[in-house]
Length: 184
Image (cartoon, rainbow, N blue to C red; front, top):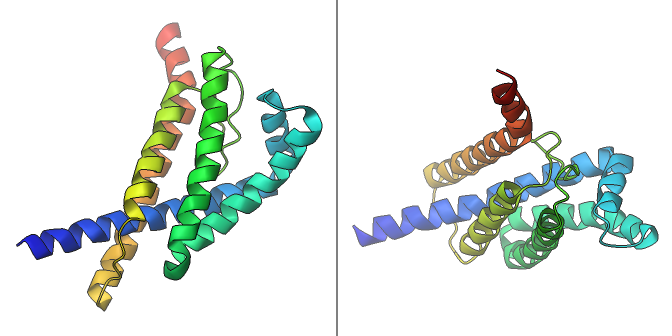
């Protein structure tokens, strides 16, 4: 029984790393596709002067894409985890600093599945969960032994991506929902 539980836990944790890789790839694509808007978001954080902020805005999607690919490729997963942890951690720190300053009307520039979100502690918490799952998911050195296990891994990763998309969309819609409640 313990071996089955260990295998299931390893599969779910590995699925987390795969899902985060997919999320990072989608976010990088979104940022590169709308780079001018992303650059404006980075500059609006007011953590760096405009010239270094533009460099960060150019580098971040590239680093996210590299981390995303590395998290998906089993032999590169640990390196990808370090890179993903750094990029998500730095972005989350920028969000937290601005929320602590009371600057919550800024578009996060997160990219990906979620549409535009404003900065909030909920966004910081969502990213914190990603960091915890990333750390746990990359600590597993297990590859699924058969086709059924590989299909289960793929399905679990896609389910985690869907959960992320739903949570992110709820965060993006939260200001609109609060406005509806306030005006009704």
